[in-house]
Length: 361
Image 1 (cartoon, rainbow, N blue to C red):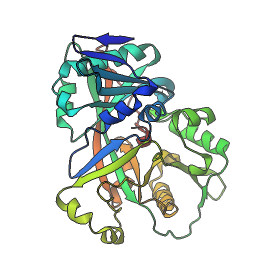
Image 2 (image 1 turned 90 degrees about the vertical axis):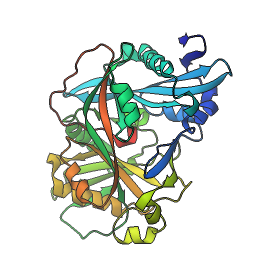
Image 3 (image 1 turned 120 degrees about the vertical axis):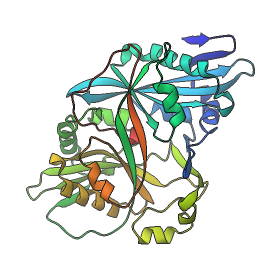
């Protein structure tokens, strides 16, 4: 399947496109007080394929020079919505080289092409846009005949937290690894209470959580030996990385004082051009959303993760546990969450709380 106009051709990516895909991905970075280049070395094609049960990667080629000028993808994952299992298509990784940014028709056709490639395998599409990316929000939220509608369903915040520290003993039992059947049973029971919580079982782990191992899971048990909290420390640095490209304002000064930041309880800032050494706290489940249990649990995870400089955890604005990490010393950034619809229907979620997996965004 392909699309072509007088100058540009859209087609499904092939493995041999990997080096050019990497060039497109690395052609821009996220500008702000902390500027970040997001990349997928060494093989972006394989990295993108690892983002879901099935991933469609679309590339745009300029026929005048034969080079790729844009890339976008849709990762199909099974998630809970209103307690049911649906196939959700996460629209991600849309990149256009800076010199092509004004070619809006490329974007319009790219989205239509992605939809055409995936519509028979997706029940619901969604995406996130950085809150600071006002230009993209303005462009995509505007109603256009040839574009899907973007329906805002709230904001999502990613919190960067320090590792290390030392916790006092408690009545709870903290464990790394453990019985995966028991963990999966707990995650399935708790996770399906949220919209967009990823379906988790032994087979799904390999397909949707690339590189995640049994030993990456942490659990907290009560005095009766029942799991009351679980999460996984998901390290994805082998196939996708965040490289700091610059600091501004107060962050420029603080980046030169890592010892001070750690002393006062904040995560250290990576050096410029250094790959951030961190993991995503994933598949978070806390019985009854108990804030005291979650605070103790997340601090125990930090205590046992000193090999990393920091870790991240993300929450939708509707999630009750967001208040816990909000009180902790952190660096954060926000995104807007959208349901994306090509059929001009208004998707109304049934007021359930939303969980989005930060390791899959």
